[in-house]
Amino acid sequence: MSGIASARSAPKPAAFLDRDGVVNHDDGYMGTRQRIRWMPNAAKAIRRLNAAGYLVFFFTNQSGVARGFFTEDELNTLHDWMRAELAAQGAVVDDIRYCPHHPDGTVAGYLEDHHWRKPSPGMILDLMAHWPVRHEGSFVIGDRPTDIEAAEAAGLPGFLFEGGDLDAFVAAVMAQTSLR
Image (cartoon, rainbow, N blue to C red):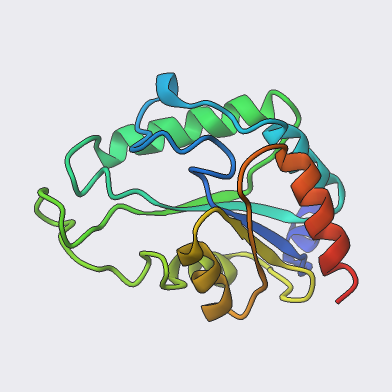
């Protein structure tokens, strides 16, 4: 077994970060890179998590797809760009899950209350099924009660971020979760 394969299979704690309102400002239906405004010290926060050995994931409701504001292809292009922008600053996002569904949408094929849609824990559980996540030390950071509900449903602590310096918030959460 190669060193990379064995390192990847070793369980690690994970940080599950909501996207809009945590990593970037939530200005409503963020479908293009021109609309992204990074939260202060977002890359620094992710670098902190990377350096501490955490897996870093984004999990995000993206009903803009169901509402016809942007396509899944456009959303995936945005996510690729976001990961590249963060990586250029030494911040690695290991994976992303999103839910494009909403029962009040207008685009056929997306009109449901999907089991991945927060407050359901589907996105978190899927990431945990595909990555070697260690429950102990893992946590969720979100900006809405639905993010915290999804965390609790997945058996993880959730922390409500109200904006500002993401790195300072992540440092405080890491200190708190390491004491558990």
